[in-house]
Image 1 (cartoon, rainbow, N blue to C red):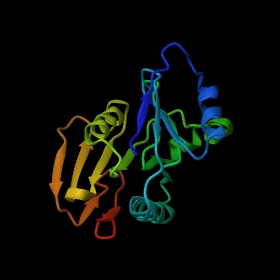
Image 2: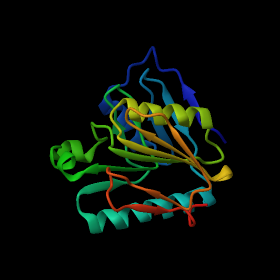
Image 3: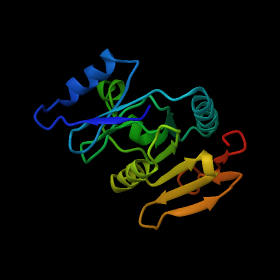
Length: 190
């Protein structure tokens, strides 16, 4: 099953209506692109869900010890500056950005772009669409992003102001200066 996009150009959902739509349909995964089109994504299969959990676990464990930021899983929505609503597989923001949000903002889709994102390509994902999504994150303020393609054991690294770097068969990834000291062990992800 693949994701599909519904043209909502004649119906303008408010942010509150989109949030409520997602709450009322928790078994479905929705995103909204900058044009307001609704993207309906199928749940992942067991293997992808397991690998995404391992990826999330590593970042959450590091975040708990490091204490400089907040990590989020794939069910978290972010309202990007371009108007899109996205849910990366894994995301992180500095603690100061989290604390700058009021309680209501923390409860709903976060009105910001994460500093760090990861997308783990699942068999139902389109590689070209996911690459565009990664670039959208960068264009909206993400400082570091990883697109992990398990099928080919390849990682694309997205950074502000730089060309995409492609790594073939890496065993680990560094959080660089965005997540100092974080190293993602890819052996459990492959």
